[in-house]
Every structure is written in C-alpha cells, then in structure tokens.
Length: 247
Image 1: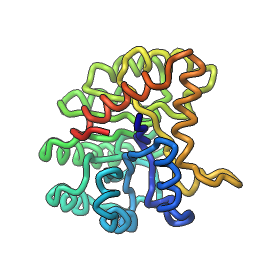
Image 2: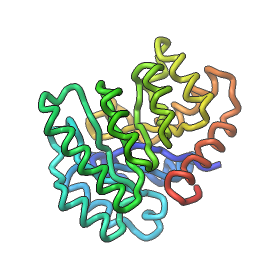
Image 3: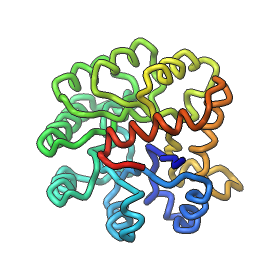
Image 4: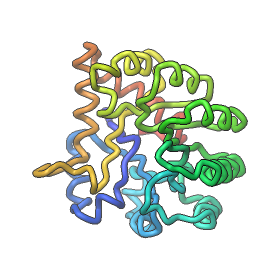
C-alpha cells in the first residue's frame, strides 16, 4: 500500500540534497505521495518546475508562517497561486507564542483564512500556544483543516476535533508523556503521518530523510500493536478526504 508524508518541505530540502534520487528511493519503500509546504518565494520555483508525473504525487500548499524568519511570501503571492489553481491548501499558517506581535500575526492569519474560504481550500495549521484563541477564530471558517505536528494538550485536541480537522502524527508525540494524546489521535481516525523534513532537520550522516515518515508509522504500529496496513488505509482515506485525490 502507498504511504503519504502529510507534511514536509521538499523545496527547502532540495537546496542541500538530490531530491530526484531520494524520491525514487522513497517510492521503492512505499512512500509515494507528499503534501509539501512552500514558505519562501524561492520554494515556488521548485514546485512549478516539477514534471507532470511528480506533480500528481507532490501536492503543495503555501502560506505566511507565523514564526519563521525566512518566510517571505506575501498575500499577493497566495492570491496568484489560488487564482491559478496551483496549491491544494493554504498553509502552513496559524499562531505561535514565539511571535511577540500578536495583533499583526492574528491579522495575517485571518486574511489567509478569508482567502481559503474564498477559494474553498483546506488550511494547513501551525498552532503553538494560543490554542483557544485559534479555535475561537477557526470556528467561524467551515473548511477542512490539517493541524500539523500538533503536540499540545489533550483538552485542546478534543476542542479542535469539533472542527472538520485532521492531525499529523510526527516524532514529537512518540514520547512517553504524549501517549495519551497519540492514543486520542489514533482513536479519532483523523490522522496522517508526517516527517516535517527541511534542510535544517537533516541528521548527520542521514542518507535519505524522506524515509522517516515510514519509521514513524512503523513505531506507532509497534507501540500499539496495530497492523501497519490498517494505519496506511486510514491515512489513505484521510488523504483523499483532504485533497480530493486518491493515493
């Protein structure tokens, strides 16, 4: 069965590693599809130059990140991408407690949510802190959400499930103190798996970081004695619900 990496940054990684060879190896291991995120103007060129075959397997979103200094995308860039039907979602966008300019951050967040509503696009969310504030904003926007790398409280997770939301399972919640949260995600059946790989997260000597997502899936299967094919099947259904495409 086919595996999807539901959140990664391939254009960013391509600056330091040979992506075609890594993608080929990943496909041989069953990792065939990627939901990648563009956060910089330079990222857009990478995605626009993908071959037709790869475009079907690498879908990308774009957004103004709440707390990533290198993010230089502007609202006009997002408008153009929407108009040309080039992105599957807006994101990653959201709120981050590391940003001291809350009012400005919230304004940018809301403008991007408005754009997603206008084009009926899903939204990839980055929420670090400010969970209640984020929910209070999001409940006014009846669209699909992919909350990536969520590792907050179980209470806030239960609140976000009141939205049409999906969650990515990453290495962050494989730690023992996050097992209750991971169990809740698995029980919800609203999950996908992610690597969140960028050039900044490559480990020394790591030949192909794209393989990490399969390692996360297999560790979850082992921890909870779940057949990996069952996890892959649930992810495939959620991928189709979010993107409208089958794996």
